Image (cartoon, rainbow, N blue to C red; front, side):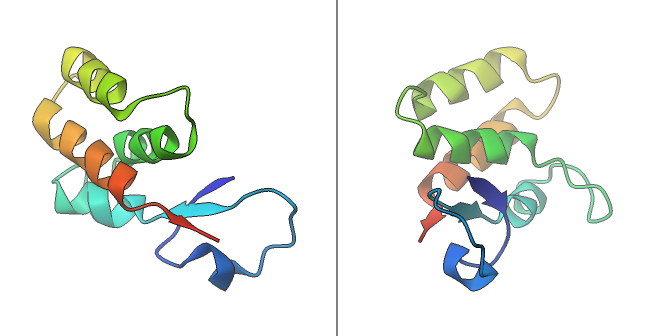
Length: 91
């Protein structure tokens, strides 16, 4: 389970047998100028984090896809994905 939160997974007090990971995708999106405080665009940060928990998806393939397909701010989106990949928190 991947959750967008500034908290560590164990701070969420979730009752689940699944592995739980968190990433602060909103902060990363705003740091990289993706969206606004009222409406941050956190999609690419979450995809980067997903690559960190799913061994079938590599961060290199995610970054390549973002740079090829993002309609705007390709480098900023790629940077947000990479930083999210590097900052996943696990229980």
